[in-house]
Image (cartoon, rainbow, N blue to C red; front, top):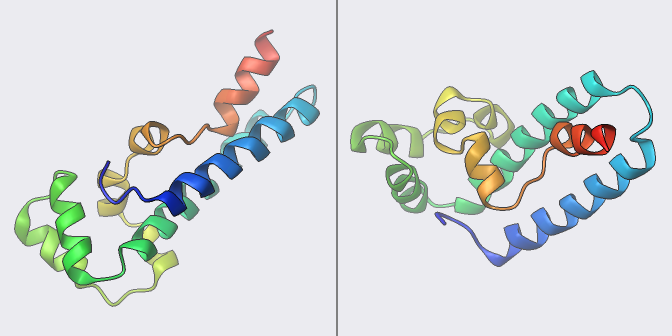
Amino acid sequence: MHGFTMTKHIRIKALTSKIVGWINYFGLADMKNVAANLDEWIRRRLRMCIWKQWRKVKTRFKNLYKLGLDKVLAWQFANTRKGYWRISSSPILSRTLTNQYLVNIGFISLSHRYSLVRSS
């Protein structure tokens, strides 16, 4: 996985534990919209953490290129001076660090977990 380090693995594992426990406790409540809104915020926060962990321009460029961005666009985006939180909602980061990518590295969405608890 591109840019996947032990720190992220620990962060995702801890987050998953909290999500499972939280949904198991509050699963009976009608919170479909709340779960969807929290999912958006958590995914943005994870993208910010990944971007922040890549630190150097060279690393950002390499990882963006590996995730499918063309060289010129990857280089331009890797050199941005915008803040981490602002970058986390950018279309380019959303296109490269997709929801599926986050699922592949172990993120379990609140909405998905909520639908599993509600259906059983």
